[in-house]
Length: 171
View: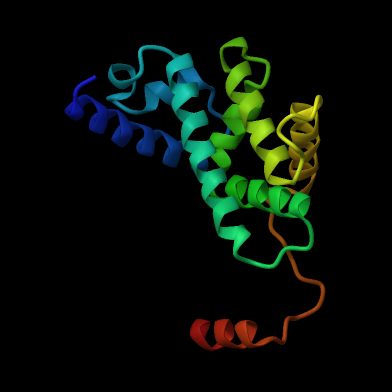
């Protein structure tokens, strides 16, 4: 792949991710057809899934790196929080990947993600059920994800400094 082709593909992926974030009802095929360069950049849906998985993994890794410097109760909570944060930032990619969890072509990538999460949570790399631990972390994170399509209403008004600043800025 040439440098120009690589850059066009990345630009197309950014466009596809933006659409996927807004339209989580689209299938991979429909998503590829929404962008003119979609079919030129990705020969098939599997190629798009690989790039989605890579973009997701990079975001997840960045979230974990950021959380390492913050005080989080436990390493497992850090891994769950990183996953939830990444899912909030990339809801379209996460929805597409979740819809293709059984895709044989992605089995190795998903296993590596699970091992990465487990290791980040403090599970030794040589643990016989490393990916199982990672899968449980992912399941726990999925249960914690807030659907951004639904409106969240606070039952009690917030009174902290940030809430006061937000109200001043909004006024």
